[in-house]
Structure formats: C-alpha cells, structure tokens
Image (cartoon, rainbow, N blue to C red):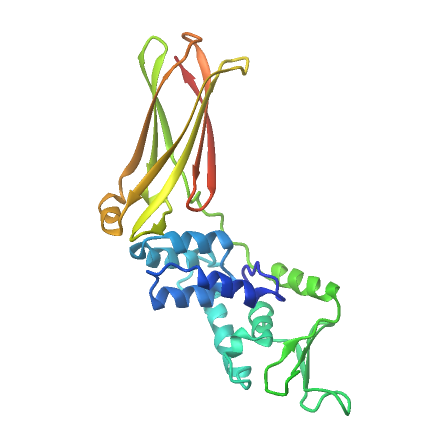
Length: 299
C-alpha cells in the first residue's frame, strides 16, 4: 500500500506528536482525514495540508487521493477503496482489546501488507507459561504478535532488528507508484530593460502556491529572495538578498487567491550590454521549501 514513512516501531509516538501541532482552526472532518491517512501521507503533504487555509483543504484532500489512483481512466479509485476497506476490516478484526483495532500493531500490519496468507492463533500461548500469541505468514515471512497483558491487545514481537527492517522494506515494496506532482511552491521571473545597464527584475509568486503558518489570528510567512547575475565567464557582476514578510487573513486570501504576490527589484549591471545569466532562489519559511531557477538574459 502507499507510503508509510513512519517506522512501525515508532509510528504511534510520532503521530501523537504530529497531532499536537495541528492548527487550532482544523475542524473534525479534516482532523479525521489526517488520522486515517497516517499510513500513506508524506511529511511534506502533512505540513502543506496543515498550513492551508480551511477553505482550501477539501481541494487538497480530493487531489491527495487522485494522485494515488492507480488507474485514473476508471471511475473508481481502487487504492482509496482498498485502503479504507482495510481500515474497516482491521477495526472489526482487532478491537477485542477495547481500542481502535486499526491503530494497534495487528491493524497497522493488516493495513500496510494486507491480510496474511496464513494466520495461526494460540489463545493460551505456545507453551504452558506462554501468553496469547498470533503468528502471521506472508509467504515464508513470519510476523509474531503477543498479548503481553492478557487484555486483547497484541503487540508486535519482532524476532530481530533485521525483521523490523524486512517489514519496513515489505511495506515500501508494496506501495503503488504515485504520479509525480507538480511543484508545490513555484514562481515566475521576468526581466525588463529600463535604460543603459539598468533592469527591473520581477518575481511573481501565485498566492495559491504560498503556504502560510497561522499566527495571532492571521496567516503569515516570510519569503527569502536571492538574486545573482553572472557574465559569460561565470563571474558574478551583481547580487541581491532580501526577506519579504507576507501577512494576510483567511478572508483576504480568498479575495487574492487567483492573483500573484509581486516582488520588483531594480538592478544595475556594471558589465554593460551583453548576455548574462540570472540565478533566482526563493525560500518559503512556512514549510522550508526552496526553489531555484536559472535563465539567460540580454542587456
């Protein structure tokens, strides 16, 4: 199944920490999405989703499942259907301990690897002093679970560190390929000659591509812009660095979501008329994503 970047041994702890950092404006529906998608969502996708204004999250969820659809030509999304089916089955099969069955160790393995080829249960343990045990087989690959507290909750009992590595490799091998997504953070650059060696560099960032952090009732991010112009020999003839703070609110963002955030930087190139190379680096501090572009310019 699709991506579970968390190691099986530490997934519950890491997810609990991630949940604690969720924005206050995230409603129950979207919290539930993050919870159910925990075995397939990437860390980058989680950060992006958390930083989106609430009005944009439904569109993200729709695109999230589309990217995982193994056959977009069909009406059904086979991956999403199978993923949700496994969650429901795991919750039904492994809830005897009083917890959500899909969140305990057997449930996670079931969701990630599917139903075992063979399943052997030993309610009284395998020995006289043993504890309730289950052994699942995927081919010749055994996975052991033990009910250490006799309460119906079975813990993964890895036979070795190597087996944990094998389980993680197995879950990664079984994931479908996700279609490459477009750059989450992107911008456009144009250069206008003014006079002599003076030019005006315009950097346009679509508001739709900006990811904000919620801060004091509003939305905020900082854009770190770095510009450099080099001549044909590669020698730098001009450079520029600045940080731009972008602040807005959810209501204002709705009004400008189709527009661009514009940065204009005048530059004087001392080398005179000719061909140059412009390097543009832009970093969005809200999600630490950096994009670099290079283009040839004539002055």
